[in-house]
Image (cartoon, rainbow, N blue to C red):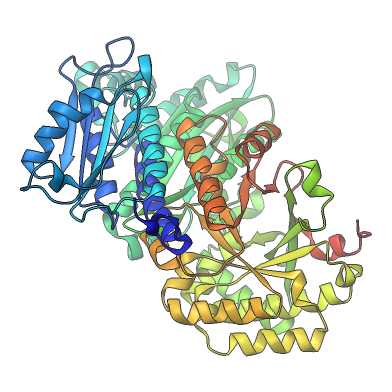
Length: 626
């Protein structure tokens, strides 16, 4: 290898680029969108070929230890590698790959007709060897040590994904789905296909309503009450407008899979409309039915989909209505649940609403219009609120070390006229759409600086507060001067503040973003790169952005206990952080098991949802410093 392999700058570029390829593999496979091994291989090859240092890729896979994962003849995927070189890999290199990595930096030494170099890693070792993964670059001696490290992680993810085939990610057959539909509808065999929604495989509206009618007749005999949950995707029209028809369908299918996983044993589940679903649950009480609805909202809240380089945050609203003799027939219960769902969306979405009689005469309002009106009013009348959530250092030694301060992320909230809280997930997309992002960011900065400067935390360097900045604010040339002025006006020390930005916010003008970050770091502020690992090719543009922390995407973190693919990827991100000299923060730490897992991986901080939900900033600032 050349001396270039030790260059931190080049290392950062390479790891960021390959991590994006690995993210593509993980995002596609983990969503169970692959129905065959050939598709998985094709996706992996395509993901690696998108990396700037890879001109060709070949994968050869045989059987697993039990001999029945793949056919005895094996399976192979390839792209971009010259045919003569590919034959050499298959005949000579791959069969001898069970014990270690193979490198050939100068292929012209083997044949004067060949050029470039190859790097080959095994998938598994010894008795667990399952195949090999090779990459080629037409330039000689171009693969560096970080390519090997992360290519091994790609192989690990691929191995884990293949080992879960065909059972873990196998889609139900058409016959199985039809049988399920027949159970719901009582339809004859030749009518079964008409009961299925073709996009999701769930019961269609007619089948669901038929099942609902039958349940309403039987509800008087049940020992527990039945409840209808009407589910609607928040702001789905925006997803269709900006992502197109294909993206919208992917969101619907993904939500259907979540609902099928979480409610597969309930009395009924169906797709009722373009972005609407229905579930019938049997619970001892309304409170327990509400708990089920809230659990579904939370599951989807943590879900983010990346498609064609664009990231989509998905949330749902749920209306709940009782199904029974005293509450009317099934159609009435469904209509009431729908009305309650519309009321939940009018509060900003990502919410649950129980039907009550007052909703019957309530006029519907579009959620965008309601939020826009409330935001405009709140900005003029100082009606917004700041909440905070703890980001704690992992490990007792770090917790007692001033070099590892506890951090507090500031979160924006809006309270409606009924006292209900609307969170940032509902506010920010509307603010982005209607040009209020910069005003919101300025309000947060001014309010946060003033409150912190007036608290006991102002003179306590062993704490930091993180503030999110939108892409529009980064592009706004007056924001830097505004921040500097607010530090001067409030008297707050810049060392207490860490700004969070996303790669999307930075890449629109990477030079200006770099100057912005460097100017604030010079006076003592720090920066965190949010949602790291979410799968954007724009990672390539951020190799020179001087950030202090990498916040690992919460969608990955919350699955690491149950999903070995997510675990492998989070481990890779942590390794990228160490390689770049950046501290890592794991988001969505929702349980002690996840907390222990990320600590074992080596992450530096955890955003601890399992320790408590976000609380008002004023309450946090009024507590004694520790």
